[in-house]
Image (tube, rainbow, N blue to C red):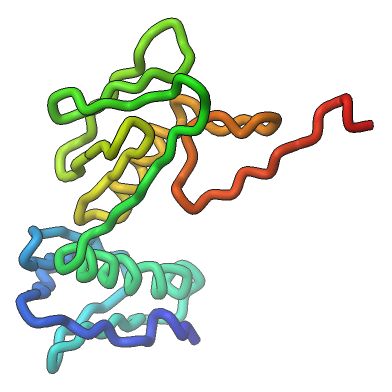
Length: 178
């Protein structure tokens, strides 16, 4: 019994959800997204709600039930509100600046790190130490944020690097503490 999978998704005004074969298409004011459906999962749109149900109780179908429901819910939220992640650069001399549609980061390396986001995701800078990543697809926004963070993840002894805005980096004590 999946509690997440059985919860209906309310469709806000201005959003349309179409089920065409094995694809669920969600259109809204910010754009359009498609979610492929898994075998054994059935999607019905009735009375302003989307209901996801299982056709059988196989282990694989039960595992995909909640996932399928949350993928559709994330698309509905994405086309109405969108998703946003914020990254902070922490460290002396660490800077970011906008360069065309992408960004250029100075991270204490011998060269500047250039980054171009994929289609559907916008990257903006605020000041010289904050990066805002916005888009309608939750997975793409998170992947772009992870790719930017990978250029210089926070290190454990001084905390320098690129971190998420709400991330807490635990600083390890050095050898002199003993």
